[in-house]
Length: 280
Image (tube, rainbow, N blue to C red):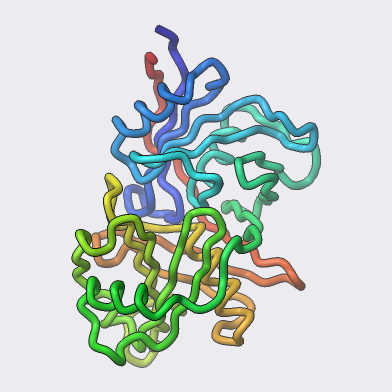
């Protein structure tokens, strides 16, 4: 049995306990794949990460990302939370940006005041959603035939399929039948109306991951990174905007999106809630 430093952080919120929780195990090089998977399953969080020595000489650190069910090649809030934990533990980047190595490759991260932001990775899958699958998702979400305004694959490693609805109230009213969504990662987005919606954001988002320990994700970096590339490419969002997520489950996630030239950055606040040790 070995002892490891561990942090539990809140990502994408400046208000304590209102973001997306993440467990980070530091110095995890000696852990086996099974030990990582078992601990991630035990935490019952949407993701748990393990920080390791990088294999790529350009990287500052390496991260492995586990849900309660499987390992992911990339995820957004684990990227920002892991980076924050690495910096807090004394990590010093080799350059102005922090370079994270994960299974999808190298991910650039930068500090923006009190926030961190990662560059949206390229989409592994985009384009139209197959009609039979879209109909399955529509029925599982309890939507009327014409409620889906747009749909798109926005998969950057986490398998996201995204739908756009007409307004925020429709998004917040969703009550998914998770038994019909098993094996899928579904993001739903709608524009906020400042004249009607009492909120300071441009879009409302919900993220559903059927079968996972946390079936609705409170604030999702990978989904918003994929959605941002979709919306910006089609002129459906301004170059800088803020997303609200987690409202329906009592959270207050805020994801900041900014396009700079050909790059899209996804940022937010991170706070440490728990520091301690774990024996594995």
